[in-house]
Image (cartoon, rainbow, N blue to C red; front, top):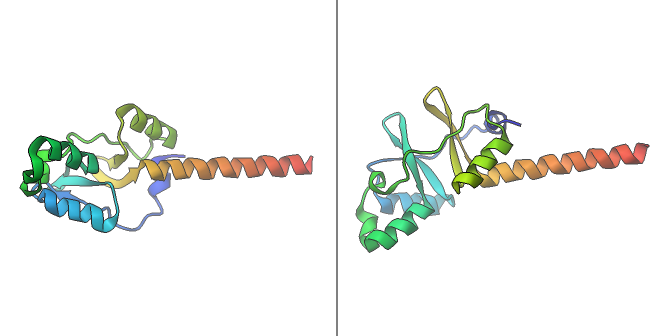
Length: 142
């Protein structure tokens, strides 16, 4: 299965923040929506990713003053991205190698989706369960 197929049924817009959003406001968005990361935009372009890890690392580096900084100062950039044609297994491999948990999905320079490692693991588990059920059915009919 491809990432494009995984996200094609989604109709909700991807929640983002801009580079000039304060860290405090971005943290509030993460908490309110119970998510671990936000794509960061500058105009129409993807500028980076702001995640819980960025908060922890920068809190250690700058102390509580980090909350008044902008996301553009503390985000992870450039963002590691995938295309819709990327397979779920390739995306999982990339996330494992890079030790990341979120990937913007890009087409022709525009972000068309955002996936988490949880999205990909859920898809793999669903696929494995379908295959196991097919095997059980085949064995019962034999």
